[in-house]
Amino acid sequence: MKKFLFVQEQPPHGSINGQEGLDVILMGSAFVEASVLMLADGIFQLVKKQQTEILGTKDYLSLIHI
Image 1 (cartoon, rainbow, N blue to C red):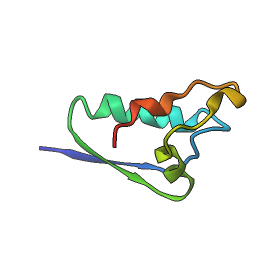
Image 2 (image 1 turned 180 degrees about the vertical axis):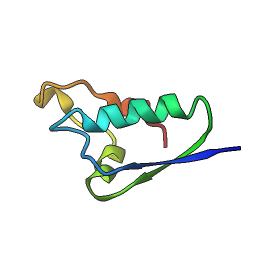
Image 3 (image 1 turned 90 degrees about the horizontal axis):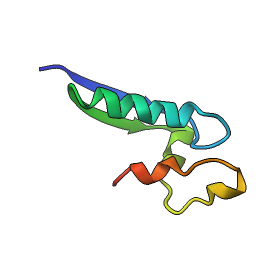
Image 4 (image 1 turned 120 degrees about the vertical axis):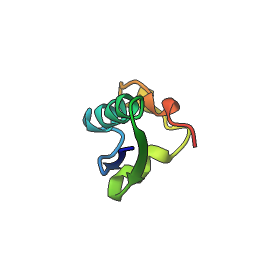
């Protein structure tokens, strides 16, 4: 059985990279066992209750359950 390790290093806001990374993780984990490693600015994706309306972006972080 194959296993994937996804590494998230992008901050949650400022670009679409964090959200796109989460989408890839969700799709990939449907087919194989997957783990996620948050590094550098990627750990900011784990902060709860972020006020994304100030930035004019959608709060996709509610999809992450810790």
